[in-house]
Amino acid sequence: MQKVIDIMTRDVLRITPGQTVALAAALMQEHNASRIAVEEGGKLVGVLSMGDIAVRAIVLSSETRIRDVMNEAVDRCYDDENADAAARRMTTLGVRRLPVVDRQDHMMGFVTLTAATRSPGVPAVH
Image (cartoon, rainbow, N blue to C red; front, side):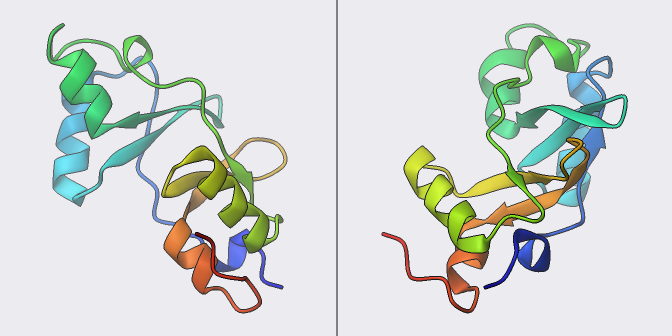
């Protein structure tokens, strides 16, 4: 059975809660990314998505701080977790990707539902 660390993407955009939404949006556009990890002290504290920017930040200002619009209730999985467990969690939560952290909550990457269900030994999840 494969672990999440074997199938996750490791190329993660990172930002801190004190930086601006304008910077996050520029990074997302430059890297064609739909979300960015928010870290503080080396640990994952939130995720900022294009939806967060579009829905919340635009009504405020481009100088709005990330901490004011990020999603702090971040569902996540661990790098040493089985891929099938991550796939089941994503299905239960109704999400297509999860941040991957180590046991100290350091951001490692993202895993997608597609990658988790294509992993050898993981049954298809519907």
